[in-house]
Image (cartoon, rainbow, N blue to C red):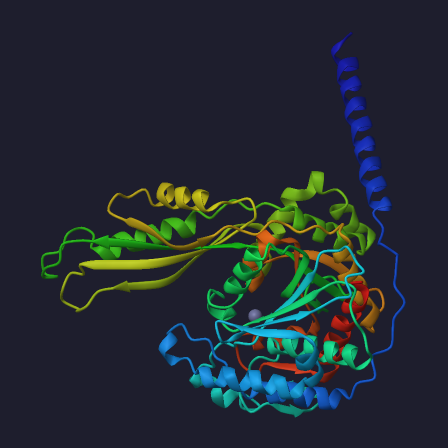
Length: 493
Ligand SMILES: [Zn+2]
């Protein structure tokens, strides 16, 4: 064979491979179509939603604030809130057994007829809130603890996070009780009082109580995902995120001790320089990004609902994954879903402008992707800092949660319940990895699956209300939440 015919043969081979590749890509994209199964929409239960909104507003008036410094806590506000629930939901408190855990967290048991062999379920929420930064008070349209219903919105600290979930659950149960409903299996409700500072006195103790009784749940539903719209650039359909996993957490304290003395005769690097170097190294050597199954299955579901050119990418992640990851790295929000993140959050050093610092320390907060372990992060810090003068101490650490199933009956029940009560047509419902933490982390070992979802729609502009200023929830969204829990409780026979 001469040279030209060999080259020609080679070109033919390449052309054939390209044609084959195109066929595979297009074939996969054509077959990647939206899930057209849909549920019939239902009408809302006949509640007076203005009254229900006022009940939620009333609950916002209790300053149930979780402070990092426990001496600032006001237990009478928590007791007041409990009493308020007792008066506002009389049937719940007459019918369900209820107890206080560590005085301030609340646990209810709705006894089923036990016609069902299913394990019990647990719905959760928390009624503590984060403090309000006093310098922001003037920016609140309505004072954060006034509990106001105005412009068809409920205003105040805790409307989104997370008193609306607690009150919406109780509204739905109160209504079911008024209709004479009795569940087939036992249903539990747990409302923590210290989620914002880790849930150690509340949810954790409740979980231990269940462990002692050897109780296992088919699933736990806690706060987390939302219905969204317009949050993802280039995707216009309403998008509902159901949290199937949450990232882990690790805070490491780096410290350096060096000789003090007069700053007129300094060493080449002071303790401040050494620790700064360590921080810069950690920032410059981030964890490698990757798609975990929860994120991949979210993206492929979203992709199926996109125009053909974009579907081509999402249906062929086997080929395009590196390009997609590159894209996801560009925004803070999506970057956090594809890697263990690194954030220097605290820095302490130096006493006097003309004295050499003796102690310097910094805290670095990592959020662990499922699959990255505490040990891996510890090794990463030591390898990247690579300086014997820097002491590393792990202050607090927890691995990421397992990823809950999207094939379970429970997941499907949650999907159906939110679809049924939502006015939006063509809502795309996807599993997602939560970058923040919830109280449900304490229940991982006693629940087959843990899901995180709030049953309300969040507009992009109201996101700043979370732990921020002007927290509010539309009355129509509160109605959606009540109906979501109602439908979910009905289907858990
Ligand atoms: Zn919360």
